[in-house]
Image (cartoon, rainbow, N blue to C red):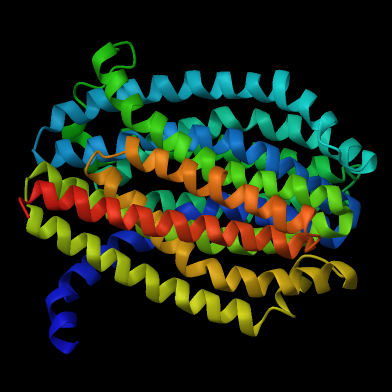
Length: 451
């Protein structure tokens, strides 16, 4: 064991140095919604908190489509940088930025003309729906600036520059929390906005983040050798397709997983507002650990992508296995914290003792699926670094929509286990995904290295 640690030690350290800032910036996406849930739960009550749960369930499906499309740039940048093809990186950024802008516009239209209508037909409490619709519209306006931010963020991270996105995300979240409190409570002469207030705070935050991240990329000396051929008017169909060839399957992977959890929230909503609010509390905490694990996965994508570009398969395997080790330790600690603090963590979000009691039980189950959630997202990250995205997309579909969500409905609704049964179904989906993705990694890396 000691010999194994020495063999992997430089890979642990290198991965952690890269992953640290990515973890924080990835966590920023979730912290925006976490802050919204906390502010609404503490200052507005259970019905508005249930409305936030409903909106996030619907909106997250749209959001992760955008995040997945933006993510298509990172492995390509890592591979081209590994080949020292610096001019190509700037051209890829040009194409990615245009794709992200167009995607942001289309995703807003999807929310405005689709989700705003669908939300009326999900069997939810009418009071919850009334609170949810204005918030959903305002939140959808933030998609476009978020997509612009992610174009620059994924470019910088693909080159190994991760700290600036982290810093922007940290300050953006501080601003989001402060504005949310002011808007929701109605401070400094502002009329109390309720749930809509957190929507406006998120919109302002994401607009500023996009501007600052773009300014950093275009003015930092770190990127000068990559940008001579940057020109947003220099659009190449072949390069756009190469980005979408990775980004579209990654988006579908996100949709299949987040969509299953969104479906679980809708199923929980049919049980009542208390169950839906408790689901929101527990899933928000679980999402925080997931996004941190996805930061480790993003670092794995960059490291394996760079090694893949250099055809160094020995180093690729070392980075892959070290990433699995890191996420297992990290998620194991998170699982322990969820189990030990399950009675206390829900108080961060609400004072409703009924909601707290239900959420405390869900956190025990969340502790159980932490390891599976971490290993499956790292498995996806490693395979993306090698350009393998189609089969993993099929795996995520099977894991969540053939195994996880049907079993969640069976246990939760048909067999009357309630919201806990829904979460047991989700756990089985994560376990299935984790095992199948690891098997896929072993198969792909074995072919590449001739084993």
